[in-house]
Length: 94
Length: 258
Image 1 (cartoon, rainbow over the protein chains, first blue to last red):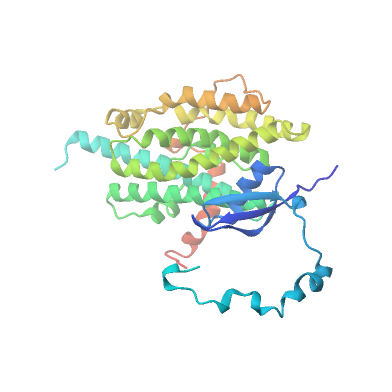
Image 2: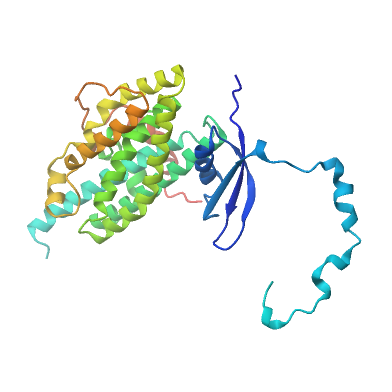
């Protein structure tokens, strides 16, 4: 029997209008207790207004070994950055 | 000049505030003893949070008590410079932590009472008490959510966790009756509309407790026997040891701050 509780990734929305942000992980026997544990471990200094938890096993990660192939090609393509456009003042903050 | 009736209510209110404050303080200290010893990191932090909530509630009740008394005693004097016989906490609060199951059970039995008491106090004729209750209730609701959840999980868990939870319930049950044993202090405050008669909370408490314990597959002991005396200053041997640790610093280094 596996004794260790499964690992969960915790995402917290800091305030209304912002995205949930990954803040860390924790152990819990199920989703309900993962939310409670996340509340106690990650929001005790009033960090959040909403919590998501996801089983860590459900996260598919990119291969660190493939880093060069995945990300290097974009390094010298600065024309992909939108910094060449003049944004009218009326648009406001983007 | 304050009338004789006001004096009676004020004296009763002081006693009653000590009961609220001391129960929160002593239970908060008990829960804080888990700090660094929790069964898992997540639970360790959750317990520390609960302890801090309870100590926060104690501060509100005891500050009020000190002001009402009018003898210059603040929350710290009341918490750190009284001896066991001056404490007015429920006996349930001072019971030792035991194993994690016993701590959860003690918390659950208290949390149900605390939530019902605070809910009633939100409607107190005393604005300050109503405000303290409103603030504390949000914390207590979460404490109950958590302790009820854990009681069910552990009671209806493995044979080992079930056995431990049943033992915890058996050993703590006789300390629950004191929560509802009303005396002259309660009667004075109830007639002034300041606080509910604790006996009036018992039926609802029992209904909630039965619901959770049934789901937890635990059996409520068939006994009405109740240890009493905590709220009038007659405590079990455990309180003195708890105070010795809790008060050591202020006793050895009076007025120390950091």
